[in-house]
Image (cartoon, rainbow, N blue to C red; front, side, top):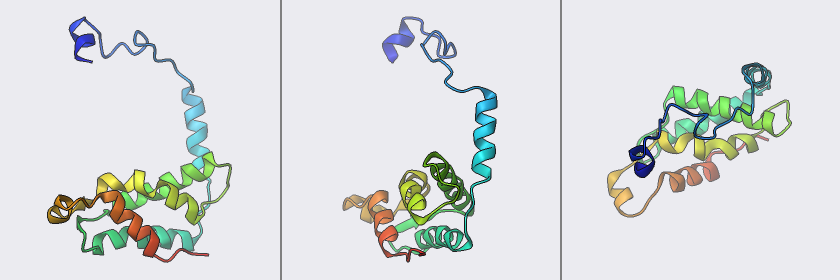
Length: 134
């Protein structure tokens, strides 16, 4: 990367870098509208809230997921359901996106991090212990 910049690469010239559009603005708007229409039952909404609340109550974490992070877990779950061809979110969609969506929103306690504990490990534990709706 440094060599490319040194050789005069313009980081703002995405076409020159070989990046090509795979979807139009209309495609993206249609996708967003479709995702908005994905249903989320109250039990699954409660599950999302319980997972995020568990991060704030975890003794392994110094900082848990905020309300904004909770809403983004909801949106990511809806998007994953849509990409999976479903018209509704199941707990499996929530579990599929939980770690990628939340790992950067939590902070492991420093003393545990020094011992090798990771955000993914804490989230795995919470996903295993927070009751899943049926």
